[in-house]
Length: 171
Image 1 (spheres, helix red, strand yellow):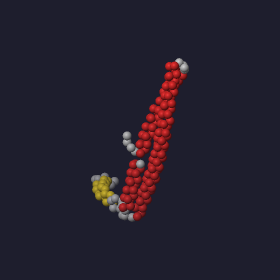
Image 2 (cartoon, rainbow, N blue to C red):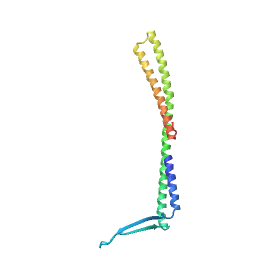
Image 3 (cartoon, rainbow, N blue to C red):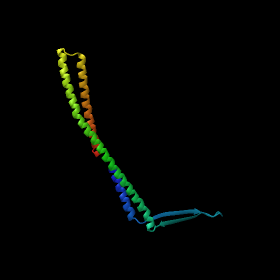
Image 4 (cartoon, one colour):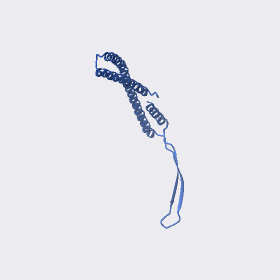
């Protein structure tokens, strides 16, 4: 957005300059000639000063102003496109963050249920009511649920980071 704004400011300044200046800048130059005729006479050296002062006419000014106005229109379009893109990015990142935060409660409930199941199966195993396989399966389910919680925390942190980046905040 800052780059688009600066481009728009520069185009507006160029338009103001084109509207104010009504002629080209004067030019000054040095001219030097060295020549001799066919008969072999000595070289004739000529030095001169050239001064060019252009006249102020609308014919010179109109194309510059038109070009500057076209540049301003283009910069306005780029700025509007940058605004739309930023709004879209913000909307997408905020939706991603909301989805990740909603999922947090679900995965925490899953972990709680897996811990309760693992604790019950541990007591059943110690009482000799179930085999080792069932106990290990419950522990694997608990591990997977805890892994999902960790992945969800990372997803929430990433989503927050992307929202901050879209807002232009520096970490």
